[in-house]
Image (cartoon, rainbow, N blue to C red; front, side):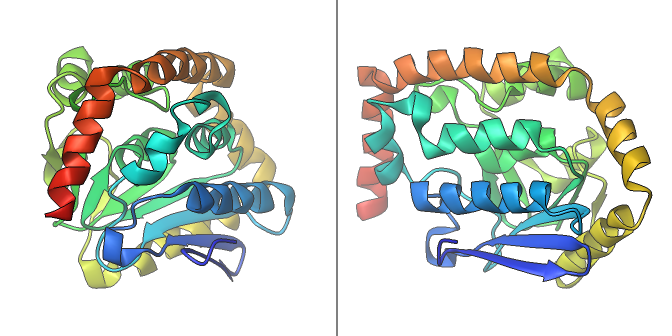
Length: 249
């Protein structure tokens, strides 16, 4: 595992913590690889019944580390970020998110692939793909309109509007808003509760709730193809370099 991804067991639940707080847990390729390994460990180990993802230091994740991310422009199809999206879209066991602070990009689209999600009042979400000159990922263009309706999805994906925990709860993207001091405990309690239920019944119910996983996988690939082309465009490269320039000041 990457030193910036902490993985631990808590009974029948596996906890994955993005631990790069000095960068708001912005994800590098190595971090994605470690999270993919954790997903595989949870999937293959019959003793693990649920997985929790959270962030360290008061944030969930600021999304991709742009310096690292731009290096995948030439071969995005096999990149760690896309491999992670593919893995989480097909993950067969209950997934619980514990969200504090910023949840940007993949930090927000992960909501669409979890079973339960809890956030603190200071959680702030944003899907800034269009502003970065690319398209949404993680089948967001399919799953988000289904969850919150086309008008609201257009606000979040076309206008890239930020939204807070209260709005995420109102729109059905969260299960509850809890105090920061209680966040990790609540998420782990729910994960252990899920892991303690009859596994076959949980898995079958989850499949019925989530619908056709192959349809979701096809949308992941359709978005990825457009994303890869956009990532090489002057407007995407310019937008990302402008953000990097600001962060260096």
